[in-house]
Length: 262
Image (cartoon, rainbow, N blue to C red; front, top):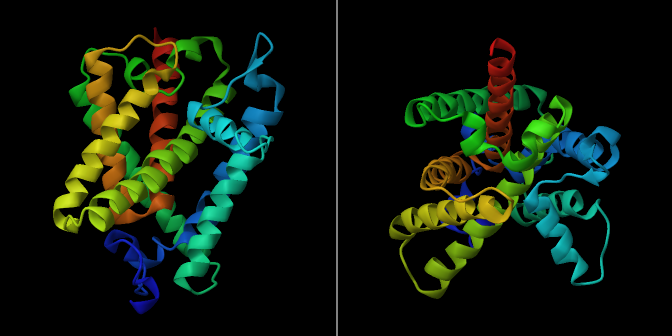
């Protein structure tokens, strides 16, 4: 544990050799989500069906990252995925984890992510009874009906990557530094505060688009934020990203099926 002495306690998961620990490791998370990074980059940035009336649609979190980099004079759609790679590789080097490629591990992580996503869909089908899933949960509600199914799929994947990067990996780490390192709060007391605070900010973030704020949408997204934060802290960034992306993909699938049967 000495190699992780300066990390927050919840970031020290991964020191063992079992599935639970190995699935937490930054390098394994990076390899696991690499296909999602590629799909979003190609689909949303380079492919023509990502545009509607000449405008390319990206996840707001992706645009926020582009704006952040532009403050320092750096411009390019490759910067957000490069930041993801750099953060996870830097974290891997700092932890001194073993350098391994484990296909079986990634299959297991995918299966676990699928189960977490299904559980969230079931939860929301119960909580949001009578409300359209798309109206309360998808990252691009205000233009979704205008987009092809391919673009909906790509944006769902992008939400999983970049919203989890900003609101879980970055925000939760910053909140941990403020509450635990700066103010000396115990980890036991800090984690619930961190989870709820990050979830509320995650929910409010979705109103940066054109959708009108509603209490129903705010509450459901806050619940989702709490769910994703818990997965991030206790199951790792890779499974968290895949769960979020998988959930959004299921929402898209349910919406497409409802329109076909309608």
